Amino acid sequence: MTSERPPVPRAWLPLALGLALMLGAYLGRGLNREEAIWNVHGPGFVPTGQVLSSVLDRIDRMYVDPVDRSRLTEVAIDAILDELDPHSDWFSRAELAAMAEPMEGNFEGIGVEFLLQEDTIMVVTPIPGGPSAAAGIKAGDRIVAVDDSVIAGTGLTNTKVMQLLKGPAGTEVKLGLFRPGISVEDSLAVNIRRGRIPIHSVVSSEVLEDNVGYIKVIRFARNTNVEFEDALFALRQAGAERFVLDLRGNGGGYLHAAVPMVELFLEEGDLIVYTEGASQPRREFVTERPGAFRHEPLVVMVDEGSASASEIFAGAIQDHDRGVVVGRRTFGKGLVQEEFPVADRGALRLTVARYYTPSGRSIQRPYGSGVDYEEEWRDREARGEYLEADSVLQVDSLAYGTSSGRTVYGGGGIAPDLFVPLDTGSFPGSFRELVYAGRIREHAFLLTEEKRVELEAMQDVATFLEAVASGYDLGTASLIDETFTPDEGRERAEELTQRRLVERIAHNVWGESAGHRSALQWDNEWRSAIAAFDTLDIILGLMPPAPPVDAAPEPEEN
Image (tube, rainbow, N blue to C red; front, side):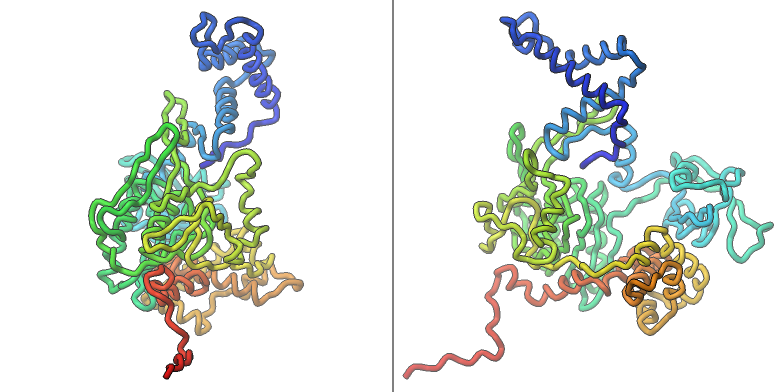
């Protein structure tokens, strides 16, 4: 994981370089002396930590201009960590707090999904079970005042809105609301007691065609395994007989969330993953009980954005021949970080070991001298790896065997059992402009408000999708007119815009899960995942391929 810290201002660069030079000079003082300062048995030994502190003290007291010692310390730490691996990092207290919310699985606030439009907070939907839903706030409400202060038209930003609405659980906030259909004079005032708002990792859970239970997981947070298990049992209760787990774009998270999730599909005593490092002995994570879903067919969807815990899940399922992995080779993030708090300054996340799949494959892709780690995706693109299955790297010296004897390869990431090329269809400028400007989301919100009664009368997202397929007007053509230029394909622009509108409207009316479900109807990877069930045992090497239907029988010898 890398920090989102802003780059060091140029004004600091000479000072940072000077700091490094001073450290070198200080450490080199003993080169021509009988006892160097790094001789731990000599009287002149100075611990490295004291060397750094001594240099910073000298700069603090004597440098020609005022300096920010805290910032200089971070510069020095970053320089040290840059010499290690791509994922060891230093995080300030503020950065740690910002990263903690989604991984802890909750935050404190009023619980609304909002959209900023015309400098006004529009409520897309109150989060079910949250304080806003309990207080009667509805989708479409405009929040125009907070604690008797008018905020509409004051230059709102997402950050400012979060500062106004979020706060410790138990505190109260007074909201002034304008609700469409009532006069401005009759605007509403609502007092809300803030509470803990869940941040869900399982964002879609639906029974779809052929009794397939579809689950999309976007992170591995503290409570993800509980959400996942609940979703699986609910899908089974609703008639699901086989499952597709969508881990595309899932950058990972906590190992302790992934382990019980994999366990649901394996036998008792199966190895899930192990870790090992130069200073860390091998530690194995093994299933403790038979998985409740160990007999149901399973397909796991991955792509180049699936990393860390996603790769642990996919690798364990693949190595035990428990399910088929569909998509493209995963990111290749297989380093174990431990967090070491440092007083009240922040924390060091230091790589201490590597993750290995049950067959012994290291998940981590190469890094270090001669490797441009951040630009590795360009190398994949140049090899054609996103488009052709035979372009995926397979190094014979890194070949491993699954439980049934299939060959799988190490070298970084998890290569799929069934490859699906990246969709490289064109994205016209008019469509891109609508996306970047937020116009598709705004249009979907306004259309939802205009036709909410009509849409809700459709009962469910499946009926809505059928209506759209039959010509239900979403105003796509008029939206494209805002940005369309004659030198590009209008049909493709309208097609992509219509898809996004369908997803957003489904989300607005029936929830996030419905939005993801609606996107699947255009998804080639989803269609490949469904098709994989027909040849699951053949792909996994559990049975030989069937002979061609029209094969002639062998002649008998007389």
